Amino acid sequence: MTTTPGTIGPHSRKKVSYYYDFDVGNYYYGQGHPMKPHRIRMTHNLILNYGLYRKMEVYRPHKAISDEMTRFHSDEYVKFIQNIRPDNILDFNKQMQRFNVGEDCPVFEGLYEFCQISAGGSLAGAVKLNRKLTDIAINWAGGLHHAKKSEASGFCYINDIVLSILELLKYHQRVLYIDIDIHHGDGVEEAFYTTDRVMTVSFHKFGEYFPGTGDLRDIGAGRGKYYAVNFPLRDGIDDDSYETIFKPVITKVMESYQPNAVVLQCGADSLTGDRLGCFNLTLKGHGKCVEFMKGYNLPLLLVGGGGYTIRNVARAWTYETAIALNQEIPNELPYNDYFEYYGPDFKLHISPSNMPNQNSSDYLDKIKVKLFDNLRMLPHVPGVQMQPIPDDAMDVDRVVDEDKDNDPDKRISQLQSDRRVADERELSDSEDEDGDNRRDQADYKQNSNKRKASSDAVNGTTVTQVTKVTESTVVVPSTGDETTTENGSSNEVTPSGSETIIRTTTEETIKTVTVVGEGEPSGTTADESAPADGMDTSEAS
Image (cartoon, rainbow, N blue to C red; front, top):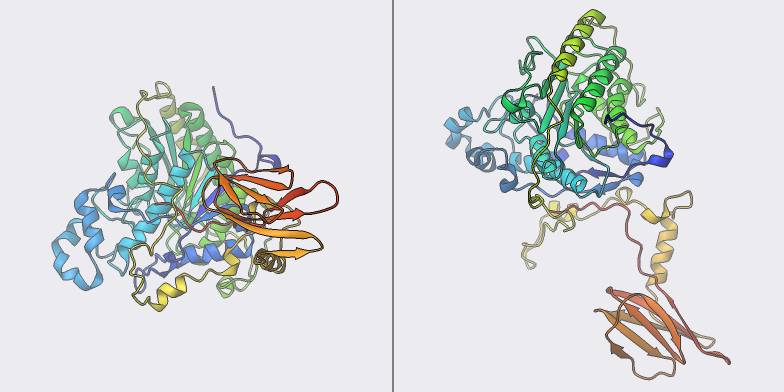
């Protein structure tokens, strides 16, 4: 049975979960370093101002803990990352050499917390996909594909991709990893080089280029032989050429391997004009890869990666968020906090440069033929014996509470105080009002004022506020007798003589309106509890 991408239309809009921590943009690799986490903040701000947040669930991910990181990384390496700081570097000289930390991968303030945020988002997305609570999970702070088991590499310290794939393997027999970063995804390939449960496919620049791996002949080993697919490319590949290799290769991979879930690393250093890259892709060519994989209707985890011309990184990941949401967004950029970065044209899409494409049709066809031959060597679709499913890496239903261990009598810093102030632009409308008549801010304030009213009596109408703390049935007599409580369940209103019976199972405040007329007395209830925000900026840990 083969899997083919389906047509994505308005009727098949997918549920998208998006992970972002507002602290991620504060981390700084150092003066002159090309890796700038600020690009993730720019992306988020563009997503907000395009209004894309209204169409998806937005979460602040939990911070991954060391026990989660050591599911792949060594204990000594994680402990080193956890303890090293700019002010104690001299105490870790030997370990810095051993773990390849210091030059490309510098020690900066908050290094471990940055790794926690990056890994936490990808892990949370994997758990969400496993539980079938979402169709697509997005973590643009992830995608750090060079990190090894006991070694930092290529600006990457903790390999969030490997951690998330390990999480997906708890529920899925086969996971496909695709890498469209200009650099070879060596850390992920190395981690799964000898297994058939993960197939890695990487399209990358090869030949005197970091990290120097990803040869066409690197195909895996042992049980993983032929489950590593590498497409080496030369400088200057453009949108048309990239499409002629990506779609046929991935189509063949999907037919041969039939994965149950997909992880797509969307490194933006393969775009034209990248500070460290040498490809000539535009947003449209890069985004077609996301659109193509979305069409297979499999659980899909989208992560970031490289990208060093940060204005184009923000453009690309915003555009690909829109693709995941099946939303058309205008080429004219909305005004945002970093509007000046996008001059002089202030447009979403970028134009390719005039650099020559050194990838001839003959060269690309030869590589494709060789890869197809390798894929034909796959014996069959690999399976796995049934076994108990391990516990999830985290409880996605539990809200993060960073202040739970804080002393209530201790004065908090200004930074902590500022973090508790939510930007009104980050609050979405209620999800149950997904239409043209969504409430506006003024209407929301009016409803808030209405909820503050406690009781009233006008023209024979008595409004009684009843607060239920446990599962109970509240009987409100209309004659002013005392209220009695009995055990009960379900939300139900039943008129009974001059009494109104309210059964509930939740803690809430309900206003019960009893109208006393000349005929039969009747009871009605008006539940004016506040609607839930459509955007939940907390995630479980």
